Amino acid sequence: MKSAVTLFRIRKIDISIHWSFPLLMALILIIMALQRETLSSTLWALVGIIAVFSCVVLHELGHALTAAQYGIHTKSIMLLPIGGMASMERIPEQPIQEIKISIAGPLVNIVIAAMLLPFIAHYVPFWKYWTTFTNLNGNNFLLYLHTVNILLAVFNLIPAFPMDGGRILRGILALGTSYPRATAIAAFTGRIIAVLFIIVGLVSFNLLLPIIGFFIMVSGKAEETTTYLRYHAAGLLIRDITTTHFVTLPGGLPLQTVANVLLRNANPCFVVTDDNTPPAVVMRSDLLQALAKGHRNNPLRSIVSNNKIILQSDATVLDVMDQLLVNPSQIFPVLKGDHLSGVVSLNNLTEYSLIHEQQTDATIRHEGGLQTTA
Image (cartoon, rainbow, N blue to C red; front, side, top):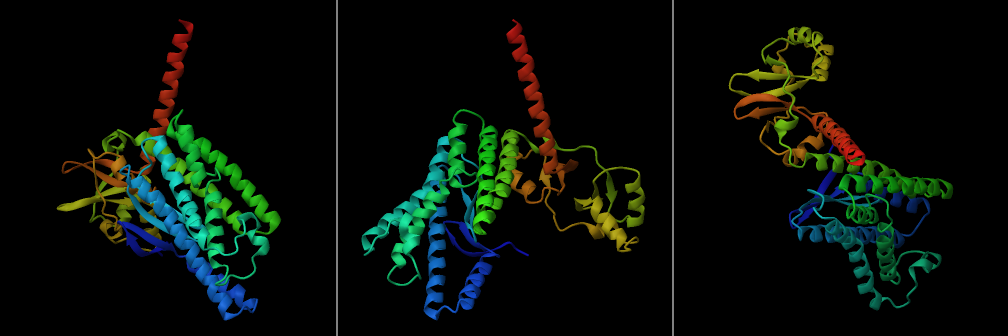
């Protein structure tokens, strides 16, 4: 099942909605029905949700349009029940760029709030609003929207990576250290804040805060890993991380014969080679599943997956990072010209990064020792 549905496009940016978003709308309708709210109140509640998430889209477009000034394309903006998420093709090259891009989103909300202010007849400061708010209606709609935009700006500036405030924190830290180090510190800070969100939410019976806290922890860790890998992938070619020891088998072999080969080696995959057919990778797990279903006499090519991506050894790793990240367990054949030269997966880059990092640390310690004793 697709995780999101594209609603429309703005400047080549897909605006999509997560599959769970309609559940939020349905939940609100159910709650209001149980509370026996009037049809007018229910409709105003739905209008309020649509208006808020329209402001969220504008918030994310603020990030996207600012990023575009630095040559960074935003691939998509996804609406989630807890807010929006812009997916950019890469992180900014300079920390100051990330700071400006991150501030742009909350700034859009502040501008919207300021533009609404002259049209509000009975103004109530945002910190007092919820004590006077009853039901959303035509008389208080603009005040509601003004207040929501102020709260969106303030909330997003909390330094919980990967929220805007956390990205600003990373940008400030990156002015004096590497991006992976700055990301690690920002992500750790975000996890502390996420735990506080979860605790406060559970104590106050506010289920939204634990959900946000969980999202911060999961997405922060994922982006920390991605940033680490992209940092170490800079300047690398696919051939630098390719596994050159692999097993090739003709696609016509029966699966039972392939199973006997499987027992004699620990390779996680086999490369299927047929004349006039591009090489394809069959995972060890796919073979075992086919055998369990009794397909022992079927040819090996019958379980070749639909993933036909083949990488060139001279391609840069950064250019194919998205393909590696989509399915971290996927193994791709690598060609040098027209000849099969190996296989590669995200795990190759992870191992290279760890080894390279350890070698760098050892060199620094060794050279530091020489300088100290001298």
